[in-house]
Length: 126
Image (cartoon, rainbow, N blue to C red; front, side, top):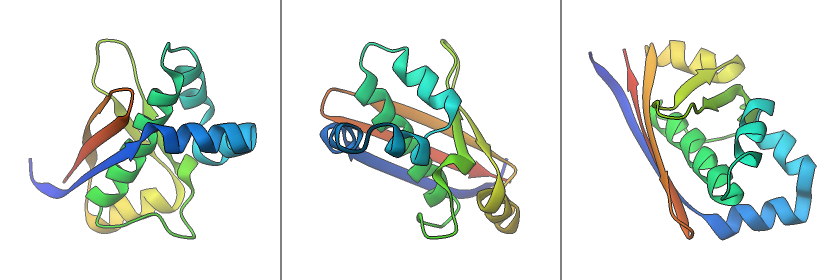
């Protein structure tokens, strides 16, 4: 198992909560997949879960040696969370092309949150 890259991110939960309050469904549709929205809305601490997924998407990009930029779509990265299992990363479009370009074959992802912050760390593996 060869490591291609390591990415980490921490995001303040109030920042994401304000974006959701201000832009509502438009913001959610631009950043989150339908599955992510369904997952987060089914949780007790909704904003914290949205923030953790945002941090995870940033960590995935950083593990590939990139930051978000025009041409990348947030919804091309999907974080699937199943109770009792590690989160799974799915990619499509330009993010998938970047993954292939960097020689990555899969990701290992860890996420955590409290009321104030959410964090994620991602390993891109060959």
